[in-house]
Length: 314
Ligand code: TA6
Image (cartoon, rainbow, N blue to C red; front, side, top):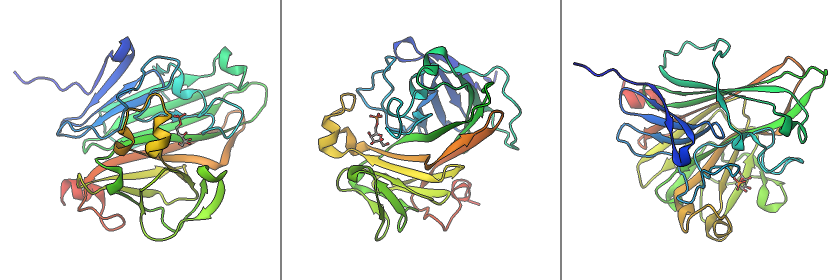
C-alpha cells in the first residue's frame, strides 16, 4: 500500500511550543514555530540543514529564537522607539483559518498561512490596528517562499509607518570562505559607524571581521556562495529594496548570550528588508513584501544561470 505524502503537519517542538512541518516529495522540508511566526529549519533533499540556529537558542518566550528567519516588524533594529527589531518575532502567531485569495499560479502543496494582529499590550507602544498575514511555502525544488501582507485596519483614520526585515540566518560552512554577489558597488549604511553612508568598493563581498551593513536600493537577486560546501543560496525579493548583511565575528559574538562559542563562523545573516524608506499605510491599505530563497550547486554563477534551470538541468 502506498503511503500518503503529508505536506503539512502540526506538532510540538522544543519546550512544547507549537510548530508546523512542511515537506515536499523530493525530501525538502521546513519547520515553522507559531512563536515568532519563525522558520527555524529548512533542509534540502539530503536532509542537510540550510539555516543556522544557535545551539544556545532559548525557545523560551519572551526571548526571540536566535537563528532561522525571525521577522522584524514594525521596526528594524533600534531605528525607532520600540524594542530591538520590533515585537513580531516574540509574539504567538496563529494559523490563518481564512486567508484572502492569494494571487499566484503556484501549485505548491506545502504551505501555511499565519496571522498576527494587534494586541492590547502592544497598543501601548504602537497604538495601531493591523493584520499581518504571512504565507510560508516550500516549492517542489526546495525553494522557500515567504510573503508578508500587512494591512492597516485602524478605525481612527490614522496611518502608520513601519520598517521590516526577513532576518535570514544562512548556515555556512566557514564564513571566511563565503562570498556575496549582487551588492558590490552599492551604497550602504554602516551600523558599526553610526549608520554613516559609504559606497561598497571592489568585487564580491567577503568576510574577515565584524560586518553590520544596510545596503540600499539593492537588486532583486542576491547570491550567497558557500565555497567550501559548493553551494549557493539565491535570494530573490520583491517590495524589499534594502539588504542587511550581518556577522558579529568573534568579539561581538562573545557578548551575545544565546550564541555558542565559535558559532559565528557558521552563520551569515542576509536580510531582505525595507529600512531606508519606511512604509506608510493609510487605513485600508496593504503592503506586500516577498522573499524567495533557493539552494543551488555552486556551479551556478549569479546573473548567468537561472537556479531553477540548474536544479532541473534543462
Ligand atoms: O541585523 C542587524 C542587527 O541589527 C545587528 O546590529 C545585530 O544587533 C543583529 O541585528 C542582531 O540583533 P538581535 O536583537 O537579534 O540580537
